[in-house]
Amino acid sequence: MLPKHIGFIMDGNGRWAKKQGKPRSFGHAKGAEVLEGLCDHLFEKGVRCLSFYAFSTENWSRPEEEVKKLNDLLVKFVKKFLPTFIKNKTRLVISGDLTSQRISDSTRKKIMNAVEKTSEFTEHIVNICYNYGSRSEIVHAVNALLERGESVTERSIEENLWTNGLGDVDLIVRTSGEQRLSNFLLWQSAYAELYFTDCLWPDFTNDEADKALMWFENRKRTFGGV
Image 1 (cartoon, rainbow, N blue to C red):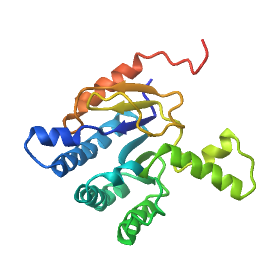
Image 2 (cartoon, one colour; image 1 turned 90 degrees about the vertical axis):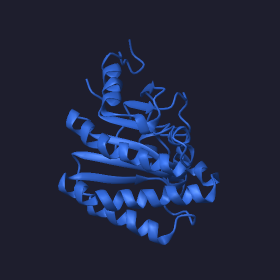
Image 3 (cartoon, helix red, strand yellow; image 1 turned 60 degrees about the horizontal axis):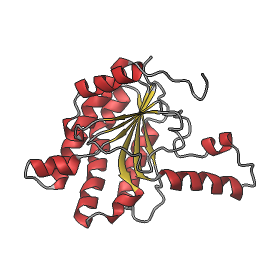
Image 4 (cartoon, helix red, strand yellow; image 1 turned 135 degrees about the vertical axis):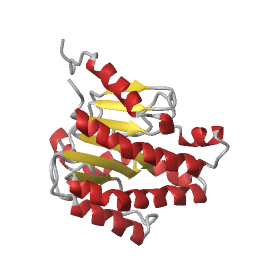
């Protein structure tokens, strides 16, 4: 059985660029191209939701120029692919703290415009985790419940996560050889299979994605049972 929801930790852009003798921003741009082609390939395979770790809450500590390039890249990606998302009835979701003052009003307006224009679609979902941290997400959900005087349960927390409605993650894929979750979709990945590959993200082809799918299909998932 194929995973319905895959989360990608797109690691290795900077190292890939360094190998090419290029600035880190060159690697991020190449990584964005990989994301573009991967979506169509996996949707055709039958995957419903794809979550991409694009910019974490910790990424603000990177050099100012790199942060600006990453933010500009997100806006360009959304602008470029909004017509395709609408044509293919693909819903765009942005998961993360979009209220942060670090995010410019212009950036917020552009990405939320795209989110609103695709909000009615349900067959395919592209979830961009931007200014995202899983611990912050859980704290946000619990505080929202406490402020409204509601009970804190597993279901109520899920309903107040930034990813509400996307479902649990079946498979996490991390590139570049690192083997950790880095504060990515911790709640949603409680029973996810974890696939690690040495392949750097800019080199992550559709064939590499198929290897991950094949590995997943050979896993026995018991969800705590026998």
